Amino acid sequence: MLHFYVFLLVQLFACKAQNQPNPTPPPRPKPVIRTDYFRSPVDHPIKLAGTFCELRPNHFHTGIDIKSATGAQGDNIYAVADGYVSRIGISPTGYGNALYIDHPNGFTSVYGHLQGYSPEITQYALEEQTRQQRFDIQYYPDSTLIRIKKGQIIGKMGNTGSSNGAHLHFEIRETVTEEPINPLFFGLLSADKQAPGISYARIYDLDQNMDEFNARNLMARKRGSIFVPAPGDTIFTLSPQIGLGINTRDGQEENWNKNGVYSIKLFLNDSLLYFIQMDSVSFDKTRMINAHIDYPEQRRKRNYVHKCFTLPGNLLQIIKYQQKRGIIDLRENEKKKVRFEVTDFNKNTSVMEFYVKRKPGAALFPLPEHNYFFAYNKTNIVSDTGLQVIFTERTFFKNQYLKISKKDALPGKTFSKIFEIGNPDIPVYDYYTCKILADSIPPTLRQKAYIAGIDANGEWSNWGGTWEGDWLVAPVRAFGSFAIAIDSLPPRLTPIIFSKNLTRTSKIVFKIDDNVVPTGQTPYLNYRTYIDDIYIPMQYDLKTKTIKYVFPPKFPKGKHTFRLEVFDALNNTKVYTSAFLK
Image (tube, rainbow, N blue to C red):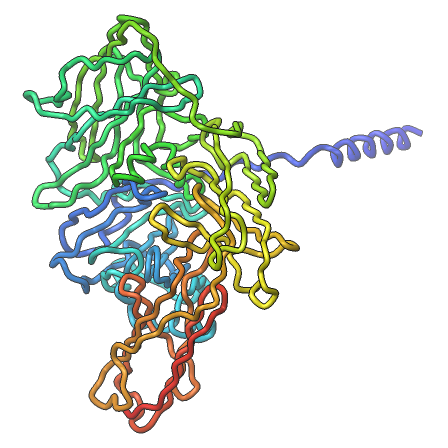
């Protein structure tokens, strides 16, 4: 009997153990940052053309840009440590020719805008392009395939992708999370004793909804060792709440580039109010830059202002400290001292000081023209005649007044009403769904339909679209004017270097272009090229809108056939064929 009770107790505890939830595994330890692990990716002194978390359109810069030693392409690029090639990326946009190397210490080094790869890596890239029969690829080799040693030449400095001059875009990411970390933490320091410059501070009157009014610049001038506002030491406002921002750039000796700063501190009456520091940023949140900056100022004037107050939907990890989200409260006739401290990575610091004072009187905060008011952290759905819009909890950065209206279609140009959704000066975080009801589209043209964005200059862009009955649906990530349009025109194709006799020519060059600019998730032009019915990869330079093929040294002599097919996002296709002699 005793054995029976013992058996029951064992079974009871076993059942309870089985019903217990699995314990949460401990968090994976972060890889350790060391300053002596990585070597420099170049063999000349580092001069920066861009800093980590520098402000860019719709994103933070996730690496550092290292300048060429000569100002031209071709500098050797070296692996910063042992590892293996985990990814080869080739694209006409973004990083252009990029290489990713995983290292045993838990970090991945990234090399962007390369002119080309080492011969071994080039061969693997060409094989993958040939297998996929396309120029742009993202290839993930097996970890045993391309082993790399520290100091090995892996490529040449270039200007491919979204680059405007010869440089190396260099990143260090945590391998598991893919989160970029400031590369300067790893000992890749650049000599610098020059403090950042301050162009102006910017003041905003704020209402209870965080809407901004009367934004104005306080141009900075130097007084002794600090900056002060040119209009005077005391800045007046009628608003009981204000926010402040600053336009600042960092320089470097013997370097004309003006780059982003490392940290900004805002003090109020000598107490820290707001603090940002550029240590790391996630790709998932990088578009929150449009909540951090003065978005209309950047969009209209290409000026970048760090707003030192936080919108509710801004969750950036660069924000290290804030009181009351950085908002400054002022009673009538109250005067408060303001001090900005702007610092680069080498701890060179610039200071701007002034006072803010609230004058007696009532501030006027007129409501913006609107017919909707949306909570920023909820799904919001609009259903109107001919339009359906679904905003997610990731669309807005704050509670938002929005006006949605419609205009008549443009005969022969749009196949729906034209819908005005919001104001282009309102930043959008993540995609929302836009559905537009079609009006009298011929059945033969339905596959050529897209949701067009029409800007103030009359430029049209293609947001894409799929059919749900008579509704065309597309993900959209901006506000403005939208309608259904048709694109049945093939891409434009022009031979730049090509003839029937190429015996004295080392390359083939064509210009390719289209009548509608792709945007959002819509792909760029694609193409396939064949010589003697064998696929050949031609390099795509989106900046010049050209594709190029360089004949290899042992290209067979004699007569050959050439075929180029270019097609856009709606599969409109242009084909060029010719025979040539080599």
